[in-house]
Image (cartoon, rainbow, N blue to C red; front, side, top):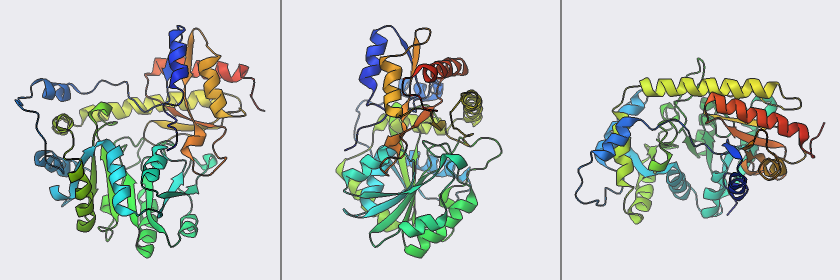
Length: 390
C-alpha cells in the first residue's frame, strides 16, 4: 500500500502546531464551510429506538431521492435498483474496482489522478496504467490515441474524475463522447468519479457519463455527499450503473459488509430535500477562492499554474528541486508571521516514476482571507527555500 500524500506529513504539522505555529491546511479536501443545518437537525430529531442494520444496497427512500437528484443533470429513467449506497466514495471505488477487474488486470487513468486510486487498485492486485496529462495545457484530457495505445489484452476499464481531483479540470461532453467510442470499441468499463459535479465554474455545463447513449452496460458512476454538502464525515457515497450483472456483483460485496451506515443516509436524505440555493452559494464561494489562488500564483516568480475549471483544487509546478522536501520544509523549518501552510506533494498523484517531483496540489478550502495569508507564506517560503531552482 502506498503512503497517503494527505497524511504522510501530519506528524510535522502536529509538531509545528505544538510549537505555536498556525498551519493553513491546503493539503486535503476538507471544506471549512458549515454543513447545512437541515442535515444536522435530521440527526437531532431522529426517532430511532434501535440503531439496526439497513438494507445492504442502501435504504430505498434515499435511493429514490437520488434518482430524482440526477434528473437535474439530464439523467432520466434511473431506477432505485440501479443506485447502490456505500460508505463514502472510497468504498464505491473499491467495490467498482473489485467488481469490474480481476487480479492482474489493468485500468487506464489519466495522470495526475486522485492518489487513493493507487491504493484501491493495489487492494485488488489491479495495475494502474497511466496516460499522462500536462500542466502546460491545464491538464486537458490526453489525446484519445494515447489511451488507445495503452490498451492491451489485460485492460478492463478506464477511469476519469470529472471535474478532476487534483487538477480541477472539467471534461466536456465532446471529450466524454470520444472516450465512449473507445470504451465501446474495446468493450471496457468506463468508471467516472463525479463527486465534484456541482462545482463547474463560469458557463461550463456539467455532462454526466450516465447520459452516454448505448453505454448503459459500460458506465459506472461514483458519487458522494462529502464535498458538495461539506459532510465528509458522514461517509455516504453511491455507485450508479445500469448493468444488471455488474450490479449483482457489487451487491454481493455489499452483502458481505451487511449495510452502509444508517446516520449518513439520514443526513443524505435531508440534504436532497433542500433547495439549490445552498449549492449555488457554495459554488460561488469556491469560484472566488479559485480566483484568489490563481491570481496570487500568477504573481510568484517561477511558479507555473493555470485556471482550474472546477472542483476546488489546483495543481502547481514550483521552482524547487523536490516538492516533497519543500512541503517538509514548510512545516519543519519555516514560518512567516507565526504561520505556515501544508500542501500535498505532487509525485503521489502520478503512477509514472519521476513525474510530479516539482509539483504540488493546493486545495482551496479556506476562506479568502486565510487563502491570502497562506499565499503570503508560500511566496515568502519560495524566496528563502534552500532548494529553490531558477
